[in-house]
Each structure stands twice: as C-alpha cells, then as structure tokens.
Amino acid sequence: MERNRSSSDEGLQAALQGGKIELHGQFLLGSNYTFLVDLHHAGRTFQAVYKPMRGEQPLWDFPEASLAGREVAAWLVSEALGFHFVPLTLLRPDGPFGPGSLQQFIEYNPNRHYFSFAPAERQRLRPVAAFDLLVNNADRKGSHVLFQKRTRRLFAIDHGLCFHAEDKLRTVIWDFAGERLAGDLLSRLQAAFHAPRWTGSLRPALEPYLNPDELAALAARAAALLDNPHFPHPPADRRAFPYPPL
Image (cartoon, rainbow, N blue to C red; front, side, top):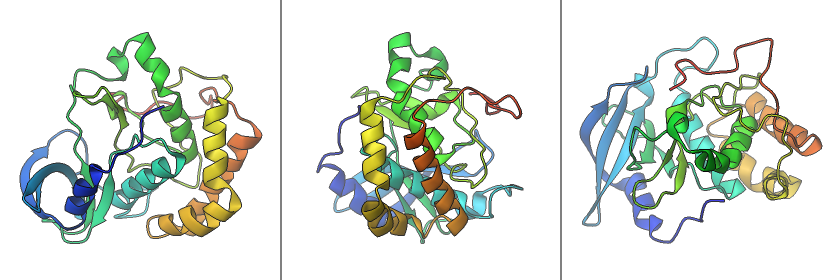
C-alpha cells in the first residue's frame, strides 16, 4: 500500500487553493483541453494540471461540465480509503479559462505505463483495480497509472469519466479477475462507507460534485463489493476495455 501524504503537502494545497495560476503549456493528447500551469504562492512555485470545464467535450452519457468535479471526487474517495494515489486535486473557480480542476503534477517517465510495467509492478495495482470498481471508472487507460520518477510512488490519474450510476467499468487492469479482495482492501472499504462516516463525512464532501443517483450508486457498489469481495471478470455483453487502451 502506498504511503500517507506528509505535512509537506500543506504548501501545495494552499497553492492549489489560492496561488496565482500561470499557464505553462498545453497537453495535446486527449479530447479535453488540459494545461500545465505554474502555481505561485508564498514565494514558492508548484506545477499543476488544469482542466477547465469549458474545455470538456460534450458526452452523451455524462452531464455537461461535470468532469472536473469528478476529478475532485476521485481524490476525495482515494483519501477516504487511505490509498493516497490520486494526486491532490481541488476545484478552482478562477482559472485562466474559468472554473476547473487543479491537480498536483506528477513527474514521471511517459514510457513507463501499464503495458511496460514489470510483473512485480503490476502486482502493486490491486488497490487501483479495487478503486476503479468502486468509482466505476469508464476510462482506465494504461497511461493512467504511473510511478513518480523520484520516489517510485504509484499514482493514478484522469478520473473524469467515473461515478456514473450505470455500470460502465472499462479498464486495462483485468489481471486480478476472479481473485478475492485482500482483507486490508475490505477493511478500508468498510471504514470509509460505514454509515456514520459515509453519511457524516464522505457523502457531504462528494455532494458538490456528484448527483444523488451517482452517490446512491457509489454506496451500492461499496456494499456489493463487501458482500461479494472478488475482482470481476471482464463483461461479455459490452466493451470492457477503454479506447485507445493507452
């Protein structure tokens, strides 16, 4: 399991919340507008990924201008589970192109991804696979899991297409199909979605970003995983892999 975030992240969080945003460049891959930005705060500079709502391409099955909020919701769920592999993500109303998500930029080697991982590295992906089941990730591409250059810490990114109320899981990570979820994963799930914490903490935190049907579906998926704690096999009645896979 990946390590907890440290107090050194406090400066980054403050910069994400209120730092001056300076456009640094644009990521050209992907269908939605995504920018690399510098955040200037308290004499320090941090890099972040900015995804403005106005740059989201319309989708027939996801509400308009909702993907940035889903990025934030994914971070909140990752934190509630104690995974800490979704980079720190907040919603900024005052971005250069309007409201959007701001996410900590992770320096990594783009040639190191799921399809080039060693077998031992793929074994570290069980928490990510369990997380994708829970949040109903419709787009877990191979490039969306990465290891930070300096620390070799595992991160998972790009969660705009998550939390739909209908089953839409599409992922390249089917390595653990049929396997029982480990006890640690189940205990984390139980703690995060136990009634007092779910209703009193996690659900209220998610309400600005997800609609009531999506929140109910999230809780139902958690209950279903606890009731039948196994990684599923790829569905035969619909597409199980994202396109493109990388």
